[in-house]
Structure formats: structure tokens, C-alpha cells
Amino acid sequence: MADPLVKKMRKAQFITLSVVVLSGLAACGNGQVEQAAAGNQSTLSNEPPDVSFRPAPGYDGTIAKPGAPFTLSYKVIGTPIVGSPVTLDLRVTSTLGPEPVTIRYRINDASAMMFPEAQPAEVELAPAANDDFIGQRVTVVPQREGRHYLNVAASVETDNGSISSIMAIPIQVGSDGREPVENGEVRLDENGEPLRVLTPE
Image 1 (cartoon, rainbow, N blue to C red):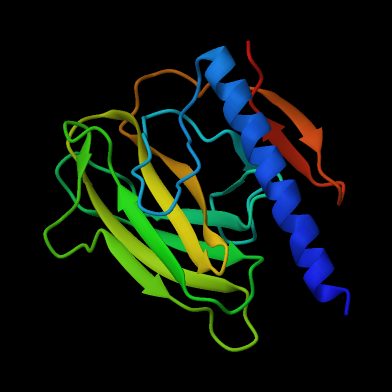
Image 2 (cartoon, rainbow, N blue to C red):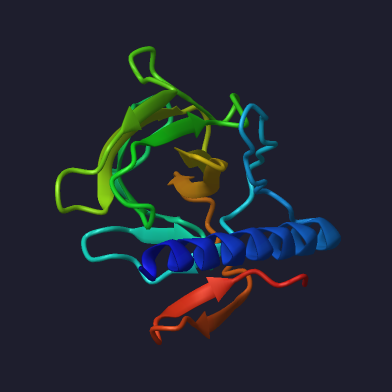
């Protein structure tokens, strides 16, 4: 009996947090993620993810927004080299139950990376029985050295419309001789796990 109430509360929290996050990103000029609405295109860019969680076991990193229905864990298989395909192992975790999830891939800068011809730009999958995640592999071909981003959008159609999140996976190609810059500050989530949140400065 509490299940519909919990779903309504989660949805209200998600909408409120989305508005706050989008407003904050717009105000500080670092907006790289927009909530995708049904039938609308989101504006994406080559910016780092706004929240990074401690990597899930076996993965290089985990990305999510507080209150968002999706969490993305990723692992780069091998060493990214200019001109050579590189595969990323993805795990999209959903809090929305067994509903099918549409996953879309997008590269914002074609001079940085491209998809091989056989790589689909969109897939729709449902979690296996008793699982809350979907496993996927995506291949990209780096075109130049540097730090590039693969945008991954996950969405679920509900009776009240589309619920979605867009996450950016960082891919380092080659070495530019600099240590990666960690943006934002580390905070603890409700489970006491460390997460990094971007700040306006």
C-alpha cells in the first residue's frame, strides 16, 4: 500500500532535484546536462559529469545525480589509442523496476571521437529477472589525443511521461603530461559513501 506513495515521493524529489541542479548549472555556466523530455532533444557538451560516486567493484567509475533514477558504472577496456576502436563496458542501474530502458549514445565533438559503423546509437533493453541493472558495451574510435566524453542518456517511459538522465563518461586518449584535475568537492551520500559534486567555482 505504501508503494504508490513511495513512487510519488521519489518522483517529486527527482523533479525538485532536477530543477535545482539545472538552475545551479545554468547559473555557474557549467551546464552540460539537461533533463530530456519526451520528444525533445537535449543539448550536450564535452564537460565532466556533475557527480561521481566511488567506482563500483570492477569498474573505472560510477556516475549519477542525487535523486536520479539511473546510475551508470563504466569500464574502459584496454588503452584508448587514436584511430583504434576502444570498447566501454557499461552497467546502467535503474530504480524504476523492470521497465525497459532506452539507452542513447552521443558524441558531441566528431573531431575527438566517432562511432564505428556497426555501433547502434540507441538500444532498448529490460533488466534480466531479479536484476535492477542492464549491461551494455559501446565502441568508440578516438580521433585525437586528449580527454573526451561519451554522453549516455537513459530513459524510461511511464504513464506520466518520460523520465531520463544524461551522463558523461570521460575517456582519456594518450597522455598530455598533466595530472587530471578533480573538480568540485567530496561529500557523503545518505549511505555514507563518498561522492564528488561540482561547485560553482
